Length: 246
Image 1 (cartoon, rainbow, N blue to C red):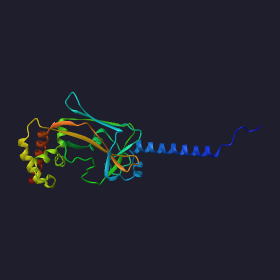
Image 2: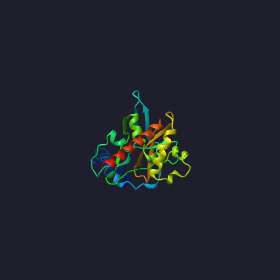
Image 3: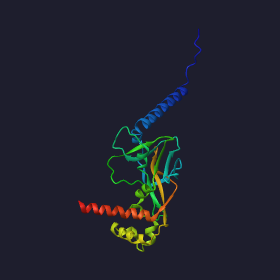
């Protein structure tokens, strides 16, 4: 009996090999993303351009006020491709990224703002590493108004806000921390309870095999400017008292 099977065309063989290799690659990538939080795939990440970042619209970041007057933070990677964010990973192969861990690395700007930017900021680089935000993954967390005031009342944010820019005749960017601190303590007396400022949160990320930093921003939420400055002054007093007690 004659064999009716026709020999495979060389082109078909090549296509099959390519498809099999592609499927193996996808399987390896997915295994790394979900088992190791991108520990290995992040190693082939091209170093991002340190001079620029661009906004991505493949992620959604929103803040909604709840019935309890808290704020619900919601983030979702709407893409089928992973994103990566820098955090203190300490070279661990496996990592659990909970909602609280993820939002620990959000950033913020005050508006109106004279010199806002979108960038990473870490006190120490030791232990930093990339972790994946997997396709269609989402994170949520609820924060109180007081928590938002606490984490937004820092000189690094005041320094870029219009509050200082409009109230100081000389270039405040050249003033040292002590001079700015003195101005805040003086000007807070002139601020009313109704004076407000807006806070915009953002998440810094890297896209898969991208050379650029990317970020996504939240909607702005309005808070009391006086609350922010009072919290800053309160923190500075505690630091001074602690230094004297040592």
